[in-house]
Image (cartoon, rainbow, N blue to C red; front, side, top):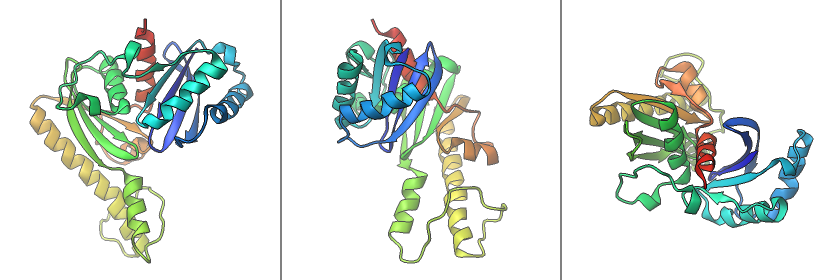
Length: 257
């Protein structure tokens, strides 16, 4: 099996993948100071609890937007699994598609992996919306080339900034308001309207502008933790695909020499 590590700014997701089927996954807060030994104690015990043995792992791949985390994950792989890991975007795990942007080296691994997986699964021009620490919008043309995109503050990041920089506003859960009114009658409902419907308006507006600029029909695919919430209460997306990044890692691992 393949051990895939998707390192985001907020969490690291580990997954055991057989072929392209995700057998199990585990999540831990991202901390570049966490050592390979700490990862091993945590991860290998969880795998054992679910009936997996480290001898089941024959390949390791790491996709990271946190460069400092790569070294310690490499230690985990080499010291405890005896495997030299593939690093997404490097050496034997190059992207394999055109990066038609001004600074190709600046594209985050997560966005490149999403591009790779989405083009493999969906036809035509695509707009990918990823709800992570940041909310990103990416455009992939019908040939699979990455054409550019948008980076906006993530919804949790925006809420943290709002609550953290005001004296009286409370912490609220991110959910759909109780009704469709956009005139709140109390502080909490006004905040929830601003967070939820404000983000819907942002997504709708940016997608509309991107489609106009593309000039051809484009399918909108969403991924990330909050994609399901917005999909349940809007018609913004043509598809929701929670595992695009992990699937991209699996595809890169398959291609490796």
